[in-house]
Image (cartoon, rainbow, N blue to C red; front, side, top):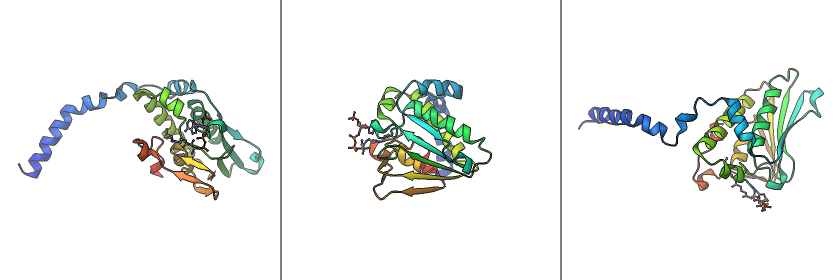
Length: 195
Ligand SMILES: CCCC(=O)SCCNC(=O)CCNC(=O)[C@H](O)C(C)(C)COP(=O)(O)OP(=O)(O)OC[C@H]1O[C@@H](n2cnc3c(N)ncnc32)[C@H](O)[C@@H]1OP(=O)(O)O
């Protein structure tokens, strides 16, 4: 069999199995779920908050704080929804110049809240989390504001992904920045490696 015939054969097999592959993990069944439905599913997983601080608003600077210190600022489903609301509000920050992404407590972010990830750990849960985070972070990146991540302490998994979405990343000496996904056998579900 020459290479061309080989490719044709391969494509025929792939076409035959395409629908099976797509429905494997049932992902195709969720594609018509609205963003609002995904948000309300995620919001059920409580814990912590993401706040938009307006302390420097009049100077054109917004500050986003991750605040879930008891879990090292791990992102719960609710925090994912909060972050989305912050970004939506910043889209209409007409006199804005900059946004700082940082955290309360002694580290930036230890990634996804593993309790939330476990509890929502179905193909559907993963699809919702990934879709919302990709959409939110793409909008964050596209804000007409200079963005800076201020990070310190453990900044792991999804936390590392979040940190690299800004235009600039300022890290304290004690930072431990780790894309630990490979060790966990998962991909980067928030799209951090596209930065
Ligand atoms: C979904 C996107 C992909 C991902 O992000 S997957 C998550 C990747 N991140 C991780 O695996 C980080 C796990 N955490 C750690 O390695 C350590 O907790 C860390 C951050 C180095 C801090 O270590 P320490 O300073 O020794 O603090 P500690 O371990 O005692 O943690 C204090 C409490 O916080 C909790 N915590 C930390 N990171 C968490 C997380 N990601 N999800 C859920 N809970 C988390 C930890 O379980 C502990 O809770 P507790 O006080 O024992 O009840």
